[in-house]
Length: 262
Image 1 (cartoon, one colour):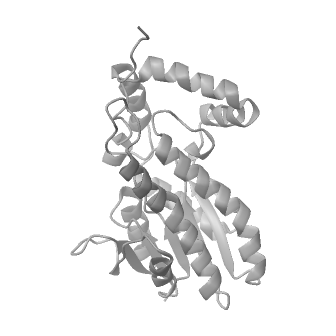
Image 2: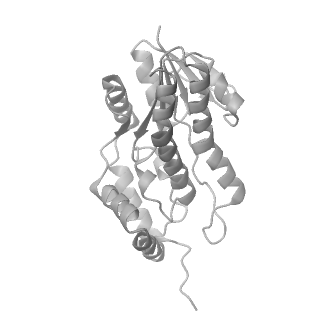
Image 3: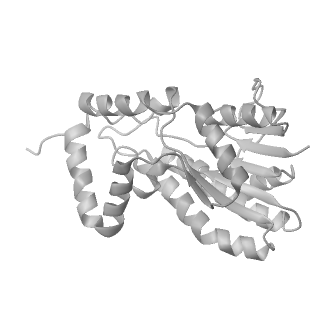
């Protein structure tokens, strides 16, 4: 029986992926920090802190055919002016970027003799940093940069057995899609509401991920990236100073923390 390991199994997309792969006849090992987690979206659990390189090796020790690095963390709190909090920044950097990178290196070290697909779940925000989610976006940008740079190295070092692939979903309908609202004023909240209400379901995104992975042709997959995100990425890459100035304008217009200079 083929085996898939999924971190962040209790999340919206993690659950949808788990159910889909169970339906396809896979053994699904759900990875979580929560002891006693129950659900119909995994065959069994691995309780894993997901912090160190040794933790990453435990994922590879399962000898999966596919490893989804789906766990993620968002900013649940900010400072009094909307600034990131140091402790939360450190946690998010570990979960969103450092641990997936460890898992890629563990796969290269321990799986050179057998095929494995290591799929990092990124974000369409990976090329367009925002003042409204600076820590989250920075982590996703880092994952994309790392995957793009390291994939060729590991692929050739393991005779093509270890394939690092990146999938970039956008917003997914559900409660977690509302998480990045703690810096928004009423106007910004309405814009976010429009986006979340029109977002695809986790089941639809999971199905797209499955088909993309089965085709096996692309290293980076994306779920219907809006034109506005493509435009913002192009501006960020081409005119970084102008892009930063746009962030200043966005902060003034949509942040509940903005204060007019005295």
